[in-house]
Length: 357
Ligand SMILES: [Zn+2]
Image: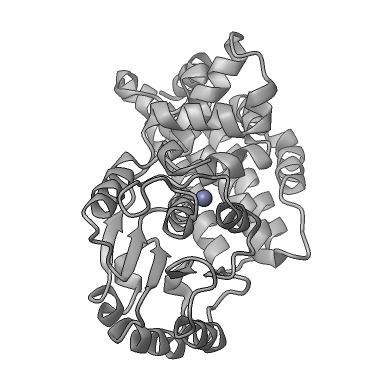
């Protein structure tokens, strides 16, 4: 892959095409935008361009050759002129930035530059940020520093003011669909003419809110099939099977040693947000505003049936229940109890208003 093949961020691509063509590269940039929209991917392609030794027109061409030793070494992660700080732990500590400082004053190995990338720069602790500031104030010649962040507000202003900011936008739905088809195995192998394939793609592109990272996460969690199971359960929820539903949802949130409890909570949050969307659709149907667009068009019939069963107030109470369970999740409540209680209360609310309108 090379720079010109970055589909997701045409604005950033044209910005750097113009910067490189005019020879106006700054020494530091912040790539700012939501998670999963391609900031790190873009940074990697830009690094390739900056370090490439095989470009035909070295200073003005925006594209790396993708063939030379330098380009290959960027892809494999061992280009000596690239130092990439990722988030191995929850905080980026001063040791990482001191290493950056030490390397920044050395001469480049092969290329004319040394490039430093700090992913999730908002995770720098204050000490690390102060240390970086020193390098940003007096950048050694030939050094380029790229930071990625989800929000400028989370970075010290002193750092932002010394960088050029490039905004990354949520990916356009049509582009996102292309990327999903190209990159996610289930979709690469699926029958792209089939109705269920189109339905799944449509739903995934919408549910991912312009984030390829989020699309990949949803696929990894088998959200395409589990969503259907969950919605089938919700469509016919009864007092006597709510325990089964909660066990099923808990099975989808296994404990994983590497991710810890936070990983479990993150998984559960996915299913709870899907439930919120389901009942939000029911509410839209209830108030006759479904033509505004349901999140789950493929469930329109079941959602409409649910809307006939439940009163508007009940649907609002159920949504309130899910929201307060999400709050409980943030406050680290016991996960099993939280899920069981949530389904019990939802089933009870529904049972109490059957037949109401
Ligand atoms: Zn190259």
